Amino acid sequence: MNVFFDMLSAAVYAIFVQNLVFSGGYGASEAMRMAARPKRLASTALMIVYFSTLTAVICRTLDNYDYIASQSQSIHFLIFTGALTAVYFITCALTFLILKPPKKLMTNFGIAALNTLVLAIPLINYRSSSTLWESIGTGFGSGIAFVLATLLISAGFSKLSSNKKIPPMFRGTPVMFIYTALLSLAFMGISGSNAFA
Image (cartoon, rainbow, N blue to C red; front, side, top):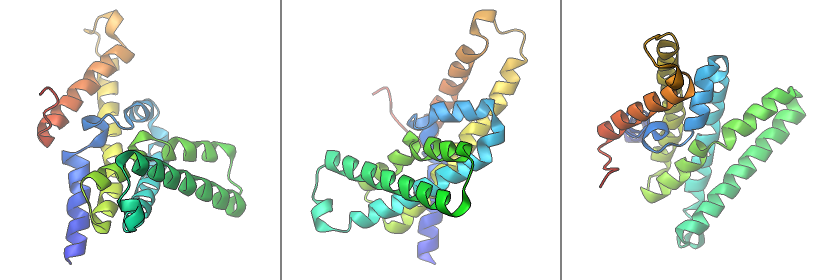
């Protein structure tokens, strides 16, 4: 039962307290793109959950080997990038061989897998010395955090695009950057980040 609560608490922490899209900027550009086209949100979010969770598990398992655990952080980054790349290519190959998917789906795999959010998860787990179950929770929670971030940006996008009081030079992308920056400050306040120190 403790394993379940470790995984759940890591997921809740990743979703609300350490929402990496807002507090770290990981995957923020993709979240903004998804906010403009929310029809692809569900499929992209599922792919991000899949890639981030699987990569987190593989990288946590690799860190159990003394040789890999003793390497520097830059070597870990290379190993984690290699693991993510391998997961991406194996997933693409299996999907292509079994399902014969359209080219658009394969492109979406690349967008989801090579998102900075997905690569950040194993590095954060490595720095915080997370257990395997916490790594799974962080990977799963980060995918849900991406959905939360996209929904918040999308809600702001619809409100701000209909607001006639915004000066013409700030409409569109500029006001979205300001809105996203304010959301980021709010999430950094919740997480207790001291970005200005």
